[in-house]
Length: 65
Image (tube, rainbow, N blue to C red; front, side, top):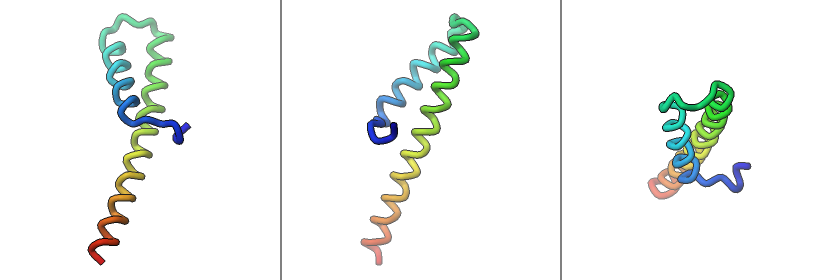
């Protein structure tokens, strides 16, 4: 799933999920589903950010060395 992962789209979806959960208008079942989706998206975003950080560190090391 990470190969088709779009960071910006994930952030937009997280914003929508947050708004829906904050509204208090979702059913408990739907809230749980949204919460689980949000957790998965957060994990994927963190993984992507760690990859970006690693790539940046490699580039810095390459050009400083």
